[in-house]
Length: 215
Length: 215
DNA sequence: ATCAGAACTGATTAGATCATCAGTTTTGAT
DNA sequence: ATCAAAACTGATGATCTAATCAGTTCTGAT
Image (cartoon, rainbow over all chains, first blue to last red; front, side, top):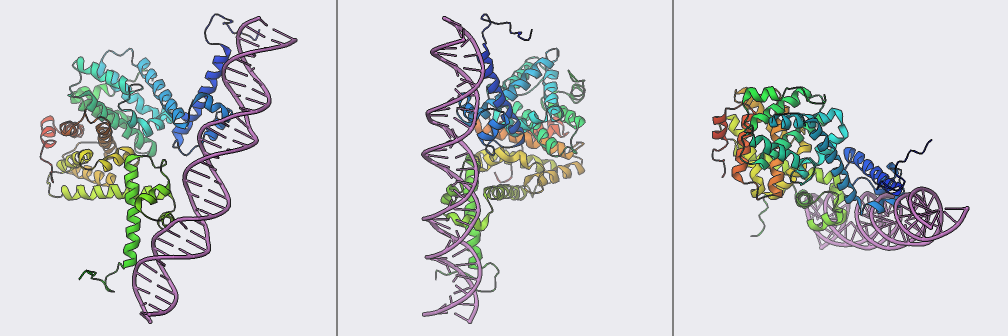
């Protein structure tokens, strides 16, 4: 009655594999929590394994050292958020709106997932030229909007740097001074970014204030 | 012949004071060099005092710990650059140009002072709401441009977050991928920022391409 | 039920860093 | 020239951290 495992020998991931994956994910989750609140150097591996409720020695079954763990943790955070954005914007037709909605939703992280917001605000700039996570998705969306004739920019990389930088600046300020920023201010900046990308004044305002998917 | 000290007892800073200041500045300079290349945690106090050619124990005559030193070093960097910007833009009449020129000159740091650029790219976001350094000067310039009717924005803080974030994103990308960015791309982004602040398309383009003071 | 392999565990060891402090050098006054 | 105060110096000991490894527990197959 209690045993509901459907894979005795057919399915690939065995119980052992699942246990290993669970331990690894516990460590990554603990690292994500640390990333959100402190710097990576201020925390010992011991503290991480304690927080993950994992034996100290087990750490080295999964990661070569602290750096490797935090790299995996950041990748985990960004990939998770990137997949969410892809899902939420899948139904939008206007590529300019896809970009704007992704931008605004990422700003909303300050309220919906403060931990993710903090990780992003702290380390986001370092991943501007990464080949995984958010940067390649954002570049893809920008290029689509350019190809569709919605954005008018010379260099997608410069555009991304500007848009991503603005967003991270907003996140930083929002986290530090919640009294200065709110959703309206976030949308206002999104509006400015659209304008930066060549949209008309009116069109930028309209798109940046459309209802957000999944809201 | 060789002795040219003009203050035997009249002037305030004695030789002792000057020696102390020199030692302190040597430590700060070493910290600035470290800040530009590595993280603060990856370097021991011993390495810093060696680089500064100062005895290890002397460190504690000036700073309570590593954090205090790096705080002073960052303040030193930002204050120096802020003063330089104030000097260079003192003769400009249009407050929008003052802001644009400061923004572009700070981007140029990648070539003129790569070390400062690296410090800024790494830590700039953390100083968005500082009451000294660059943030208060930038806010001052933004407010002046608003008062003069040149900028049209609702919230100076949001505007600063956007403009500063864009700049730091550009700096980051420029430092990591020098092949993607150049002075022209920098000016292009400055143009977009001006547009973000409410300037007309043509006016933004013109101002962002004026010759820079001190060039 | 028994067994071999895989993953987990935490006490131990080796290495590094920090703050202290007793002694030395420099400075400015007599 | 001599002296007291201030700044500098680096060896020392206490503290902390990372990585190892011998032993234990869990898993899947016979």
